[in-house]
Image (cartoon, rainbow, N blue to C red; front, side):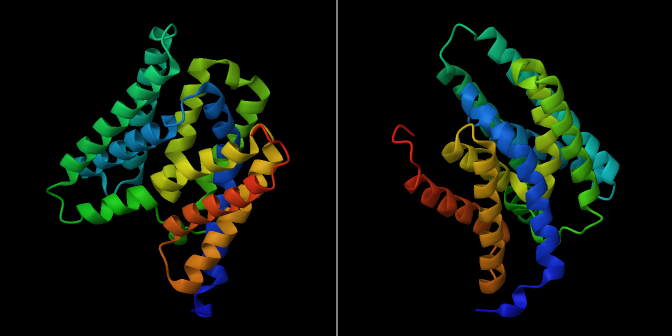
Length: 252
């Protein structure tokens, strides 16, 4: 156990990043579960990651603007495609749309692997894409995520985009694109689904579960020098499992 790993200068910006991610992802996760498209976030996050890989392959590794353009463009195109598939498949079972989302995720992941196969740092880039680099977060680096989160929440609650399929998909894509580059694909999925799965439509309960999970995961990763992203995912699952045991509603 290494108490020196609990460095506030590292853990506090990372925790703030987690709070920003949860602020947008818990309400989005509730909408995702309600629509029955659980793996949409994985697919969009992977497509955004593919956009980053494509930008890097075109020489944009040292150009943040090119990287962001690639990520946002890929995510929006992916969201439009999946929304169109949902529109054409209205008469089909939701499982069919989920299958299309799954195939899209696998295709994007494999294309990213192919593009990174000749990159000597490909394994490192892949790990960053999956588990993120939340401990590398700085206060100044949180500004773009904070702005996007504030805008997302304002638009989400002001214009009720839950009722607009196209608006939902596009806003979802932009939000996921911002968060996946900070916390990685695994944490994006866990932040969206785990709190909402236990809390249902109770937003405050979902946020509390998420906050406790991020705090516990960061503390454990600091004490035992563990990968922070993986530790937070497991902590979220653990906290949500305990919360589920004390759920008073026997139908949930």
